[in-house]
Amino acid sequence: MVTPNLVRKISSKRTLVSSMIVGAVAVTILITISVINARVINDDPKELQLLHVIYRHGPRTPADTYPNDPYINETFYPVGWGQITNPGKVQMYELGKWLRERYGNFLGSLYNPSEFYVQTTDVDRTKVTAQLINAGLWPPNSVQKWGPLDWQPIPVHSEPLHLDHLLLVRKPCAQYSLELERLEKSDEIQLMLNEYKDLFNNLTAITGKNVKTFDDVQDIYSTLIAEEHFNLTLPEWTKDYFPDKMVPPTVFSYVLNAYNTKLQRLKGDILKKLHRCSSTPINYTRL
Image (cartoon, rainbow, N blue to C red):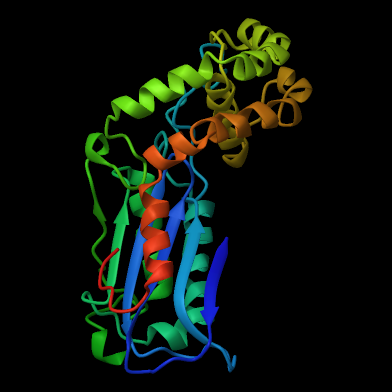
């Protein structure tokens, strides 16, 4: 989803920032662009001052599976488990080209490491996604051509998963864990869990995985959709459950992680940074 923040014209001598967030709940990429001089895009009389782009990594092979999965011994050679598929690579490259077409006047034609910074989670598929988008977004012009490829290397940065406090947010937080545990034990959430009790029991019997939570359903759903995108034939039982019956608990598994104000505050560093940039977008060089 692309959500540009367009504001009225201001002095073109100010330093402006465009930020792009690549993300899904579990895998996220952050791209920061610091640009001198605001630029009008596509003859729009408004002037682009700040840009947030939020998107997920490209389609991938399954990252995990369930005990009764007929493809449990599949190697997905030569792609491998949890990696971007060839159609996914094309999709992300085309997204980069679209961003170039849409925001080229704002970004300018020259890649400059002091103006463009990319950060992803420490996961192969997000780093590959960033590389592909960069390839479509920053094709080298005449002065940056260096050899036979119409491509230029652009650094992709990440934090170790156990220290990630911005994107995947795996860095331990005792307050967050305690609040999530309290919420999961609340009457409200227990009632919702009870509403899906039959689905949980049926999926447990069919898949061999002990399904007790919304996350458990999401794990199976993610495997099935990845196998479907890889053009594998799904088991017959999935016709009664996938995707329709599994979508609501899957969606709620993500919602639950930031269900109330306290959880949002404790796990919302990326939103805090976006808010700061939106409030004072001038003279930022890094998010």
